[in-house]
Amino acid sequence: MAADRGAAARRLEKASENLAATLREIVPHLKPLAGTVLAIAGSAGTGTLKFLASVVIARFLLPSGPRMVASVRTMLTRIVPKRSADFLALAGATIRTVAQGVIGVAVLQSLLAGIGLKIAGGPHAGVLAFAVLVLGIVQIGSAPMISAQLHCCVAGSSLFMNYIVWERVDDFKRGYDLPEVQAQLSSIR
Image (cartoon, rainbow, N blue to C red; front, side, top):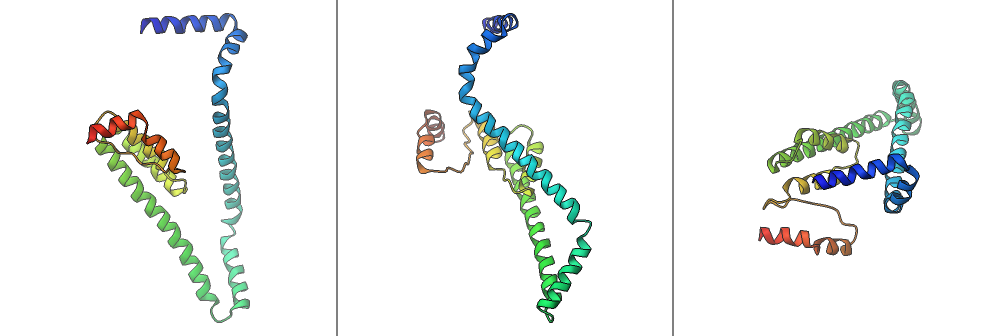
């Protein structure tokens, strides 16, 4: 451990003396990660821009909501005069029910995730359950986060809880054949 600290200190000292040489030495090791990091940053940037655009659009639509309902009512009255009120009520009820369903499912997911993480001994179960709630409401889904957390919190125990969505059967087979997975599975049997 002390030797590692000494090596790290030497690297830092070398970097402080000649940063260009140190970067030339490190860059080849970082190149494989660059694409992944840039893809994540681009995805985060795109997601942020979409979120901001939706907030701006909502800013203009929400205050004029009653006027929009009146306009839709007028339009429906011209198209289907006898049933316009029914269609408008149906549209409002549909939107309300879908929103309530999304929130209800997100609450249920976060509750089950929190209980599962707490039982499995996962760290920060409450915070992660809240994150699952937020991810469920915004319709991103919580599978990657919960999968990683359950895998991390139960590693080394006889309980093996993990789920993941595999894109192809080959990926599943490759993951299943890993020595770590086989060792974990053999300890359960």
